[in-house]
Structure formats: C-alpha cells, structure tokens
Image (cartoon, rainbow, N blue to C red; front, top):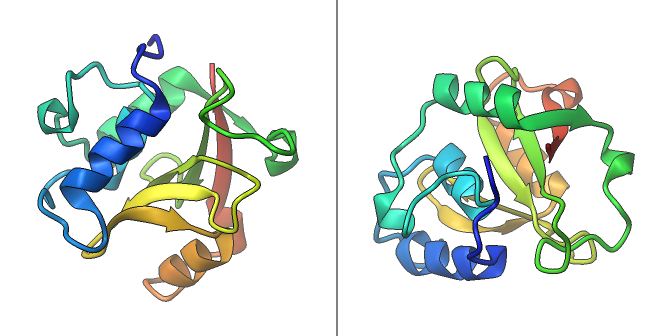
Amino acid sequence: MEITCIPALERIEEVNMMCSRENPVYEQISNFSVALYVLGCIDASDIMDVHDLDESMASEMLKDSFQEIDESEIPSGYTVTESKDRYLLVIGDTAFPTHFAVVADTQRKRPFYSKLDLLGSGYDSLDELKKQFFNNGDMRHQDFHFYRKV
C-alpha cells in the first residue's frame, strides 16, 4: 500500500476533531483503523470513510505491510511529519493484536498517538500505554512490538 499524499499531521488533526479525548464525537472506529489511517495505509477520503478493522483484519495488514523491528531501530529524533518512514507500536499478540499506536515524535514526552477505548484519541508515553494495558489483563513487556512500514 502507498502512503497517501495527505500528511500524517493533518490526519492526526482530523482524527482529533472527530474522536479526541476531550470530546469523542465518533467513537465507533477502532484503534487499528485510526492508527493505519494516520499512517496513510488505508485509502479513504477522510476518517468518516474508514471501515472499522477488527484484530483479525489489523493482523493481516500488519503482516502484509509492516516488518517487525527492535525499538532501537527507530531513529533518534524521528517525527512522522518530517520522515517518509512510518513506525507502529503493536500491543498484544501480533496474530490478534490488542492495540496499535503510531510512533509520532520520539522527542515528545508522549511520542505515541492512538485511540484508547472509552477515552478517544491522543498522545501517550510508553509507560502510560503499558499501565493502560497491564491493568486490563495479563499483558507482559514482551507484548509490546515495534514495526516499520515496508
């Protein structure tokens, strides 16, 4: 899949208008759909045109369009607005993932952008995401994976 010409920052701003943490208007879309839309992996004119992806469909897109990497392979100072490379944090079993988060800006205190259930979309640190998902089941540190779009 090609990265579309709409810049990632514009997509993040659009998603925030529809399902921000302060006022989530459009709650029905999954975290998988939000992350893949922001990265330009879903061909849609806007967020309202994105089909909701479940963990099975998200896993297929992950397998087809991304390659697992070590977190250290993400360049220091990486920002989604200034690079053509795209990175994704995958939480859970990669065959049936629990959550996708876009690596947006490694220089930020909260470098990951995603949509959390019941909270809407926004930025989080890795520690905040770990706390969110460790509290919601039996997640382990091994359940946090990094991917690069190929």
